Length: 338
Length: 148
Figure 1 (cartoon, each protein chain N blue to C red):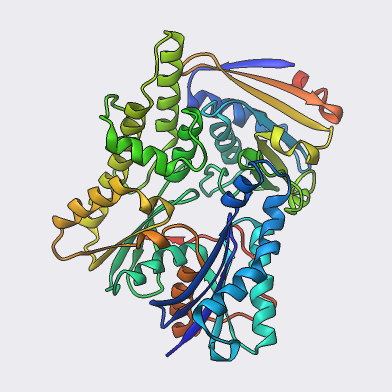
Figure 2: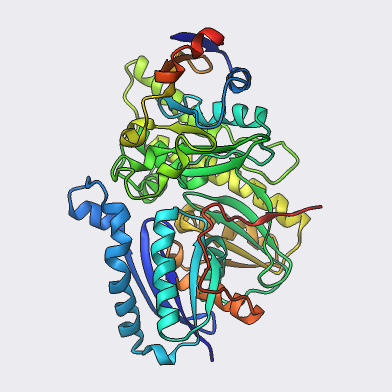
């Protein structure tokens, strides 16, 4: 039995978790800045950068308490070292290193993106070869895993991430941040009446592009405003979401046809999108050899439990770091070389 | 101030590649304009001309993406997400006016970190495809428009 304590602070969430054998979450304490901005009425300069420092020791104490464990019950410290914001990453990294040094535990460096994918372990067993659609505010990638802990990008966004397009369209339609859930809810209750373009549908690759869709929605809104028409935001949200889901579905289908895999994982913040989960569930029914493993809803956003799951893969593979481990804000998976 | 009109994303990238030959390490370009005005498209064209081989993607989420050009690094900022929080205490100063070319989208949200010597580009959407891009050199760079 291996118990790993994991630290995550790459973006807006400060989190510490304890995970057993890479799949059983003993505790997962998450403090999010979105709530603390709301608590302060929305605008507090410098709260963001100080938030991680303020919360790291509190979520650490909370994670140990929730799991009813002490440091001597632990085997290793896993930590996100990239990608992310350098100032934010540093807080989790320093917290993890300090904890590791104080309690004589080895440090396991973890790629945040591998963490999102490894969160599928909380849903079931991953059999290889496997593929993941990783969709979040910062990333949109199709990742092939020929074996455990081997990540190769076979397709990625050429411009905006899918989650980013949700937030930007949300801002255009004057929805509060983050807009993903609001758009998803509206899409469920409304008909898609506008046919927005699904970018690069005919290109012979696995790449995505959401910048053109963003511009198409902007143009539609501007034109409607110039004509003095009232916008039906519900129908627009449904139309926009259809275009996003279509693009993700089309690329995924082609990738699964050309790379037969045993497990298909849906990961990242946008994996919480209900229409995307349902659409992919239906698609995967046409691939009977492939098990669909969407990350459980509560682990789709940033959290340290997923870092504990990916940390276990590294721990098994003997991947450790020294106390001089630094952040790598631009860390990414390699592209698959054919 | 100089103004250019572009009629497609490709046009915007061509303009960027022409301006690229006037850039140098330590220079700061600010790109102001609404969502979808062409700021990242412009940066893609400029980075390609400066020898960046990897894909230039939207920096909105990461706030800063770093690329290696043939002669110097390119620091691509997007302060869009800093509207609520400010840009202080993130270590961004190391990437502004130092050893590379710094390109900043949504510069109004990191105003405090911007030196006076900079080149301001403003993107205006005229219609679906047409953009008016104005270029305004400040401080040291006041004369840049005449060279273009």
